[in-house]
Image (cartoon, rainbow, N blue to C red; front, top):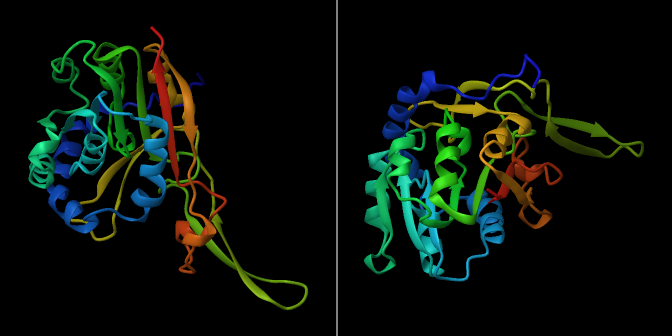
Length: 272
């Protein structure tokens, strides 16, 4: 790997990152409530398509937040263990989950390999991390732990903000264009001026949140390297976009860019 490409690991931000999410958890859950357009139209359909749960599977939900996906998987008949570094998120998830679903919620940091390993060797058929990897400062402990936590041929499904298109380092633009016949229309898009170098930066996942959060940008070759090193291979990939039916003329919004995927969803299988 070229010397100018950083490793994509940012251990110096681990403690602050944990504190930030503890402070933001209640506000985030109140703001999102029962889902936003990203979850409903992009993230969850892509995730369920890659998971293909039929019932009876054992699933580890990493960075589960307030437990929305964990509840959906449990409703499909999966046996779900859901973890998050934020005790506030876990409390919110527990309060929203009917007892009959039987979800095992635990406070576990995805950067803590010892805590992850305590969940049990060859315990899970699937692991899932929904829109969390770009919030995790160090990926190696999680990927190393998944190699032992998953059953042989176990699969890991995750979604992230698309590193090629959806980053605070890639500003959106809207330009008014006049056609030859004098008609006005607007072009919406993304300006990509940097991509290949991993970086950590602070941003607002939701405008107005109490504390700006870290986002950890990694190009695809760095993002996948941690998984490949632990014997995983990609066997499924989705790049969902908003369709014309969901489009709203608000400008500089992802709904105005139906040709650009803001989300990347990936399925990996453990080969060794």
